[in-house]
Amino acid sequence: MIEKEKNKAEKASECLFCEIGKDPKNVIYENDVFYAQLDKFPISPGHAEIIPKRHVDSLLDLTREDWLSLQEALKETVQLIEALDFKEIYTEFLETPINNKSEWFCKKMLEHPGIDKKPDGYNFGINDGEAAGRTVHHLHIHIIPRFVGDVENPRGGVRHIIPGMGNYK
Ligand SMILES: [Zn+2]
Image (cartoon, rainbow, N blue to C red; front, top):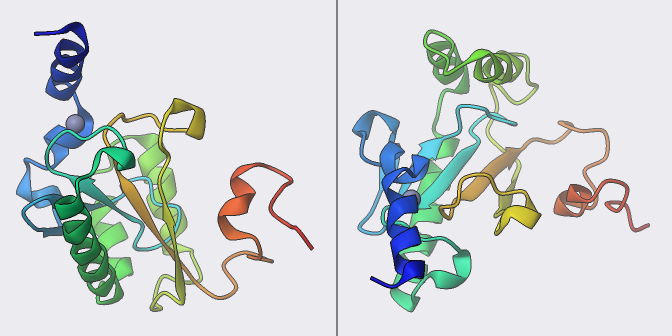
C-alpha cells in the first residue's frame, strides 16, 4: 500500500463521520451514497449535515454519480427538516447531551425565535480543508436553516465567515 492510501485507511478507521453513519439512531435520511444527521451542536433549529457513507475527504472528490445522489439527499433532507418538531427534538437531545457544550447549544435552540416555525431560507456550507475551518476530515455539507429576524442583518450570509467582510454595501 502506498503511503498516501495507508494514511487514508488509517484516518477512515478512526473517523467520526464514518462511525456516526453506522448507527441508525443518528440517521434521519439516507440513500445509497449519503446519510444525514442532525447536528448535536446546532447553530439554528434543524441544523443538519449530509455526509457520504464512504470516507470521502473533499467535495472535489465526489464522482458524477455522487453529485446526483447529493442533489437528492439535499432536497429530501430539507423537506424532512421542514416537517420536524424542533422543540421535541432539542428537548430529547437535552436528555442525553454529548457534553456541556452540546447541552448549551441545544438549550439555545429552545429559546430560538425559529423553534416553532418552518425555515424561511438556508445556508448550505462546506468547510473544505483545515484552513477553511474543518475539524472532521470527512466531507460534510451543513444545512443551516434560517429564519426571518434570526440575526439583526443577514445581508452577506456566508461572507461573514471572514469577520468584518460580510457587509459589502
Ligand atoms: Zn470518514
